[in-house]
Length: 88
Image (cartoon, rainbow, N blue to C red; front, side):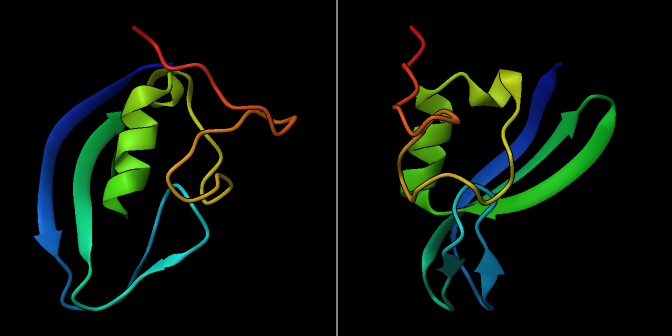
């Protein structure tokens, strides 16, 4: 599985969005990361809390994939509830 980031930007939202990483909504005016990327040949776009973006980048989930909205906000856990190791 491969992922290629095409565009990412930190912004202040003008309307509510759903975080791709965690189940918590991103509120109007809240800081967020907007990202556009190619995943397995398909174009995707989404929003993440800035701490969720940090958790995504610290884990190997950007390459291995992750289930949308199933991680705790700002952390990366495996299917057993254990923290995912940060890649070097």
